[in-house]
Image 1 (cartoon, rainbow, N blue to C red):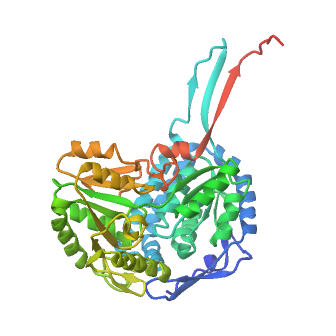
Image 2: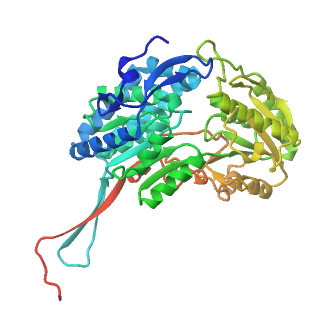
Length: 485
């Protein structure tokens, strides 16, 4: 790719493009191993620079009239569409996304921007009565100040901007640390979009870099909140630090999501949902259908239908050909998926479809005979693998769903939506989809998990009003009063 921008190649975005002391990092295409470009990285010192600039800019941004904030976010949404070809191209090359996945991700990011543009005009408080004559009690939302956003590489645009846009809308400044593997489409290009949209200088910052940059962002005393999407192991460390610092955090972490197929399910619909939920973006999705819990009486039919769908999926370089599955993000992850499959097979699971790795590419894979002791059941695979586990009753299925410490999403297929809803009430997950698949996202609906899948924080719709603000009580007396002391 011969489009290296001299701006994001040599500089980082500290409210404007500036030089930095960190090394340049190669951007590697996961499909070919090719160096696509080089980006300038930040250092912990740059985190301090960004926090200082943000704190200086935040009060002016917060007091800007709501319609002006909304207009900037609407312009950003329009620019996402105008620059779609460039943004999608980098998403495909940088992240191994198929064209369809890249286009979908940009569309829902556009929707997030439009939703965020409506937030500044929402009611921002309440009036409460008082037992004290003459006192008026106002309770209102106020900005946190500076919000740190740490984003992953699998959906680098959406999973960054679903926090960045509403945080800005609510009057905060934002420091974004994109994942090193997606620092262009999920970082530099987003800085260019918001700058072109007219965001005031100093309000938004992008700091590409490794764990030391993220750690400095989490630990900085002038960063009032951390919004993190990523692994549970890292999220637990961030939560521990934020708790010790009494700092707000929103954590959306891993998942090992159950696809439950009851004996009365429509197996054509269920297997279609299962294939999409298990294999979309090579299974590299926190909401991936990672455990397929199927009633014994329909298991063979379901397995055959899902395996048939899996074998029809084409794996290859999405930049060069029309494929259903691109590469996994790197060799380490591809080897990890292979190792989980091989260990499970050694313990008695059967490969019904797929199961083979070629470099960073892994075939759509269906495993049967998977039991709760196997790694394919217990671990978040983050690859295109659909492990099938059998059950004989609703009670057993509920116990299997709840056997996982994760609690992000689940899907339940049944001819009886009433039965499925009763089932949903008894499982510990943040999102349940009946007669659908697990990978669902709608910008207007609060999104999040339970257990090791995250804190009680939520993203989306009205939840953003509370997530990216704190509150203040103001009481007013027109005249002072005399107390007994």
